[in-house]
Length: 191
Ligand code: SF4
Ligand code: SF4
Image 1 (cartoon, helix red, strand yellow):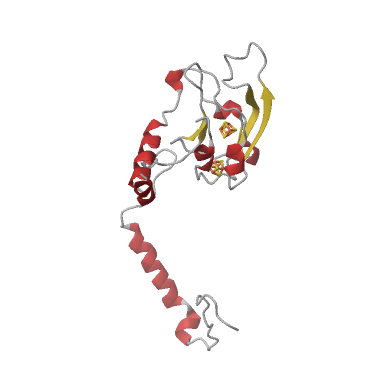
Image 2 (cartoon, protein in one colour):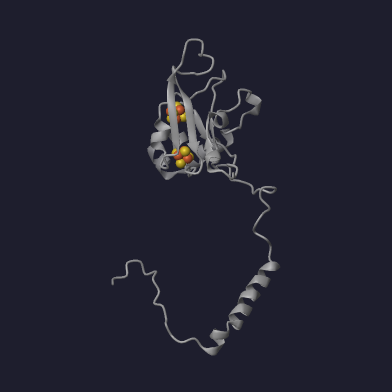
């Protein structure tokens, strides 16, 4: 059969020697490697007590932003869900009622907005697609859980707090991202 990848190996079926049959030299070889690693500098950290420093452009948990007046920016247009390659976003839209202008910036808003963090690959396409600057990925990591349904984040988790002092600053990551984008050859070419 034609070999398409060159990754396959021809398996030898030759008889094992006495040395191979007693396995002892192979066990000693394995132990030598194990003990050799005992005295090396550890590359693992004691997560979650210790976490590594993340890059400025690290993409973690999402946030649904509010505007300067504390109103939800999302207008439930669905562009983020369409852009999502993992089909991780679902939403239900609703019409804003009279008297709710202080809650929602647009006439339409997401009454339900959910992201399945088990599906999400943190690509950032949703924030790229959003025309309202309503969704961003923050530097926060998604916490581990024991139940799968706890990874479905609703508005209670995603919408940022009304108190500006408690909001996560996404500007640092955004700035780093813009700077990186500006270094891109294609951006220079289009200027
Ligand atoms: S970061 Fe990517 S995979 Fe995750 S919800 Fe957004 S578009 Fe989907
Ligand atoms: S987060 Fe942005 S793209 Fe997604 S539904 Fe809301 S306004 Fe539209």
